[in-house]
Length: 116
Image 1 (tube, rainbow, N blue to C red):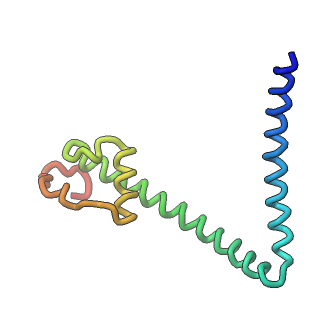
Image 2 (image 1 turned 120 degrees about the vertical axis):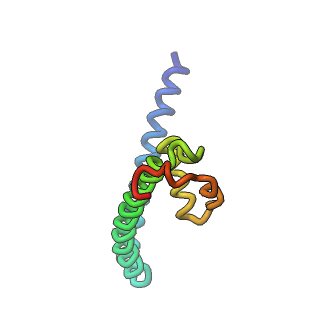
């Protein structure tokens, strides 16, 4: 009986602790806004984060578009593009510079369905 009560108290304490930590983080952010050295930096970073969020949305939309096109064009030819998820991860790796272009050496141009 008491073991079950102890587990129940422990799980509720974990939720309470998580909410407390989150409230503490927001409180520290609020205090840092009014600091004369950190306040302007915080405002600049918050404005920058909005632009970075918009960039990430455009970046993901472009990656999705290229993933769809590559998946349609090289579905039967190249193993890395057999599924949409493989195509998406290949495009993400290519955008980060981790890519080998030699996989396109044996692709016939007659198999291209779109934009070929």
